[in-house]
Length: 516
Image 1: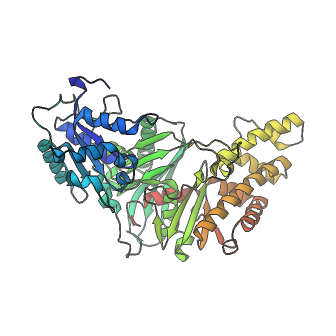
Image 2: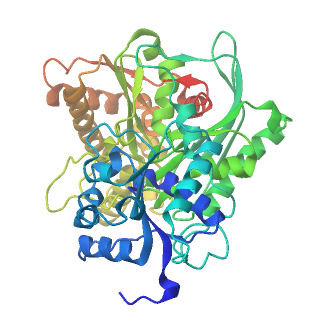
Image 3: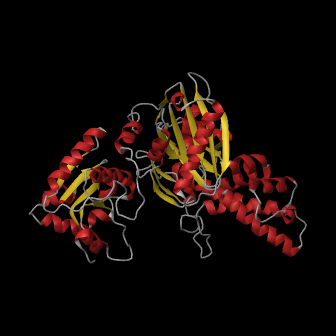
């Protein structure tokens, strides 16, 4: 890589994608103080070690955003760190390890570098300590040309026009109770819950009273096609929130907070949507961006986790059982896992992504939005049903079969059309439903065999329409589970969602109050 003086930067920030929100905040603070910073977009077709070496050479100092996520990644095993650790001259100034999350294991080589712990700091203290460490590390005669404005590092990347939300605030608010404390919901509260899907956004005003069940008022729903469009999606979510407030005749000061459920992997602590395959978006600081736009506290989580929170605290399963799994089937498929009355999010906040569990490993396995093949949700979700319905429509037309499906439009067919056809005893529709029931049963049986819960809660549009609306489909799923599950699991009870379409809204609206 050819470098000029203009290519130089004061700091290279090395981080794991899970900690990207922290890296963005750190970069903003440093650039606001006049230091120049860059991130590295890796070319995984080339030598990772060589790229690490070039990146560290491009900057006067390297700042490592340190957590278990980083220590467990390939970044931490780069020979570049070993080379720096072997150089005793200025070793503690050339690399600064900034701890932003738990580090349960040995720090290894990073124990030999300068060290700064921000995990217990308030924002003002974290900003001051970071600046002091940066000022100490950067030699005056090396000082690179400051950037023209604070923003997202790297020159051509996405800009951050205002200061990002301090990730530590989210961590402190999201920690909740200790494991020894039973989960609870603070009452009363008034919040707006938002459910973001790949094709729709729903929102409503949720009141959680002192006693009794939550209520949903001023429900709004709008369709969207903002695939891969971050700004448009955030604007549409913001618009739905303002619409609910306007309809309710209240201002933002009347709300305790806003909760948002998102269709993908969400870093709950950092308030960041790390990957949403259906939306084709990565690393979006949704909570911080909405909080900046609305000036209201905002909490986010995976949409199925939100639904599971609603079932745990206000539903039938949570009132009776301590270990259960919620499986929600809509455009995609996801699960929420409750163990000992606590929601289990997983080490990287991606527990329950069962829609990407492989159930077909053959050469003809269907391609998923995640980039993989043979994923569960490509065989038993609304998206799968629509694809199968289109195939069936062309098939019955070509064969000149008598079928309700022949009169449907392939471009606009919906799962509810299949439900109506089944109720008219249409053989083509029944055959389609049997295929979906087969794969749905296999997926549920796999979850039963793996987790052995006390009960399973099924929810989402496909469950409300096809499972609850068609006895033949429901019976086929039950028979398939009994065939595929182990004896100890095959008779596990199955409940349906308590709150129907409002389930994710209620759970999202409880995010700021739940201590899970």
